Image 1 (tube, rainbow, N blue to C red):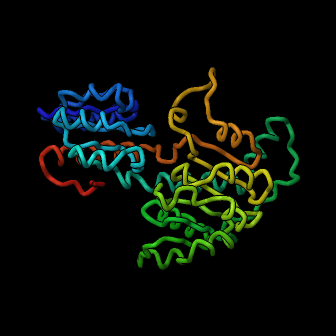
Image 2 (image 1 turned 45 degrees about the vertical axis):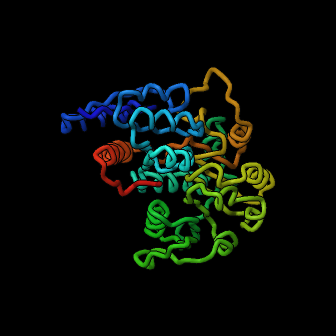
Image 3 (image 1 turned 30 degrees about the horizontal axis):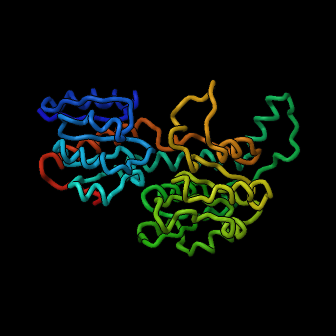
Length: 331
């Protein structure tokens, strides 16, 4: 019997796991609702494999050392982002790290569309007025999407789906990506970053968080954008210099921003602070701005995505436990 432990499981994931187990009688899966860290790593003792889905950094060497001591061969992430993992430490301790690179690109792309249309049609302002019984039209005139140019930074699995959606709506689509995919030639035009910054009406980013993309969107970049630009970030919080974005929004250097992620979101998003306070001044400022909307990193959160996150990660775990190579290994 193969024994697997899933850290920080969501209720929706439990439903998928229970269904999956009906077809895998040789596997035992236990779960908990805590993140993997030095205080919880001992829970993995006695298991053949582990997985987690968390924003908290796993950077203490003791975590990796103990997992190797327990005989575990991998750390499987049920998400795409892997900046929470110290890959050199994992490699030093013979731990294969996998992620789910494309659990549902469509889910995130639809969130980008939703945030874009919410801002484009001034629904954030409209909702505030209606709640105050103000039904006037002044300042609510909108532009139509088919007249606009959408610029995509990072046209991989998610970015390409974003491109297809906006192309279907009649928008002109530009993309900046080091890899040019011939199958997208009928959907978008590849250009450089600067062209997108200066010409796009809507700019959306879908890059991973790397040393080269940390604070990619800084004050100088926002200064290049048009005052009418709508900026969307549904990737990683730290690709944006948040103080620079706040300044751009306050000074109307750009028109609006829709964010599904923000720097310092770990330990805040997915938790309830309705009766307590949270410690993130950036988030509080963004939430108070009239030209910004914020969602708690739920772009991925659809039924298809949850099912794929669980099933793909479990397949990867069993593959590595059996001594084989997963196509999703990161080290």
